[in-house]
Amino acid sequence: MIDYGSTPPVAALQGERANKGHLQNYRRVYQSSELAAGQETDEAQALERYLAMYDRLDARHVVIKARDVETSFGLKIRNEDVAAFCKSHGERYIGFAGVDPLKGMAAIRELEVAIRELGLKGLNIQGFENQIAINDPRLYPLYAKCIELDVPVNLHCSINFSTQSLMKYGHPLQLDEVMVHFPELRVIASPPGWPWVQELLGVAWRHANVYIGLVAVRPKYLGVAHSGYEPLLQYGNTVLQDRFVFGSAWPMQPVARAVEEVEALPLKDSVKRKWLHDNAAAFLRL
Image 1 (cartoon, helix red, strand yellow):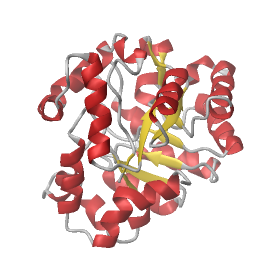
Image 2 (image 1 turned 90 degrees about the horizontal axis):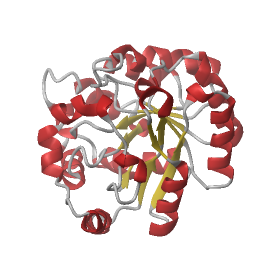
Image 3 (image 1 turned 90 degrees about the vertical axis):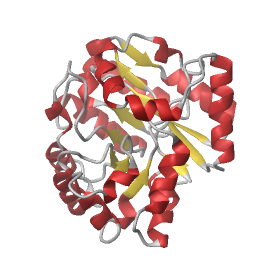
Image 4 (image 1 turned 180 degrees about the vertical axis):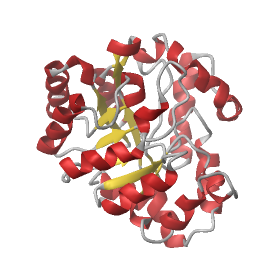
């Protein structure tokens, strides 16, 4: 199993201590799922529990993402902290950089340092937190730099629940425009497009370098009628089966439960392995 999307406890990433008031509505929406995931109040125990969880699951890799939304919301999870975590805890952990596109050339320079010097393996952009759309021209130099550095980019491509930002920043049709301009760019769009699931599937079908990250959604809902996620099951089991990547978004849901729910979906066994491991390995070039 490869978990494309997990956040270590606050003891490991100091930026997690910062004010995240713009995300408070997420705590309301994900309250029951986060309670099921469980979190220790003691920081040392929390980190120990986190690492042991992936030992039990025999996870091959876990992707940890930095974030920089200082200009808009004053939050930064530093690239240096993510790189240090990955170095301290072994090859299982793979880090993605986070830079603030509103910082202009400073962001481009920071990305280059993160990849070339810190050893991070991709870029994470949460556009709704930066308050810019996927096709905003301020992101284009970063897309070009990702191609130059030969690293992928993770783009938030779905509804967001922050009432201090706009839903439209994550619309998948903006990603289509980016891919027309940057066909070499390797993108993973996560979460998987809701409520614009059909649009995201269309973008992925059009562009071979677009993957869909099953992140921050309970996998069981893909099999629930009228949930809006059902098309993911149809296309993810057929023409796009090589482009779906599992991610728990821990602590937003229990990792073991999310894996079990993927296993329970009416998918071909070969497709389940692709979703849980092979597609992420291909995307990350492991």
